[in-house]
Length: 385
Image (cartoon, rainbow, N blue to C red; front, side, top):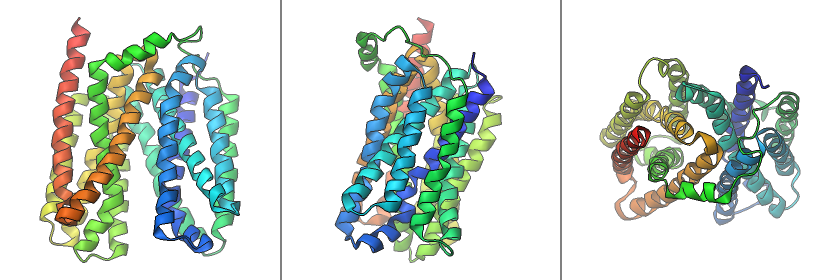
């Protein structure tokens, strides 16, 4: 029999690891371009390896954990991440470097989806609250990686730091190895028709579209905010500071939501979050100064906090028998949204200027609200049947 507290701790450790590797490319790209002398086009090809790997990992994890359980898959993917970090540290060719980033994305995609599905499985009536607490550890990892590199690069080569971080992955591997995880939900075999039947679930599609916009919003804020602020004649340093404020606001809000969602309706919290995202976009649209832009970014962080935890909580409750497969489905849609929304902002900024960026944020927040209301109504209707 598994211990829920130990299993939840394992999920948090995994999410911390995902937070670290998720920002791995951005934090060391400068060092890599210098070492290998690559141009912007080549750096872009490298950058595409990480999300491509995440997409592959998100596709495969769900059916595997439903059929075989979580333990071995989490261990294997942690080992993959460790080897990939060592590959980045000691790569002698660009091909090895690109493969390492793909493997980091793959392992990270599995761990991200797997830990979310795991927490949903062990949580009974507090899925959203526990998933919010899980999300805090992503924020800690995401904020911690740039800080660690910033402090240690004064004394060590970046290759030594990355190799050291890779070595520390042995700790979660050891922890995953010694604790018991929940048994596989479909240990006797999972009929393919059951998995394919999920593709006909309108409610699941609607929740997936909600996360399509959620992930797209988070992605474009992470990738385009600096460009937008530079267009306001704000320095690169201050723009990066603004991004840190957004991530910190998201992390702190998820910490608060871990308790608040035990007392307040998830439905109300989520709708409030969408309204706050719209307010943050409006502030950025009207911003004529750095403080106003920072306030808008902080609001975006607060608004993003409930999105993934609450929606995944709904998905986990609605499709408990095949929660892993259901999570795979919606997370693939989410990653697709991230990719397409980034492309959309590129097209819009090319034709209308980067000043249109906040309008895209507001339009996405409105679309997300509409699809969520449709999903919530569909979910309630199916529960009454």
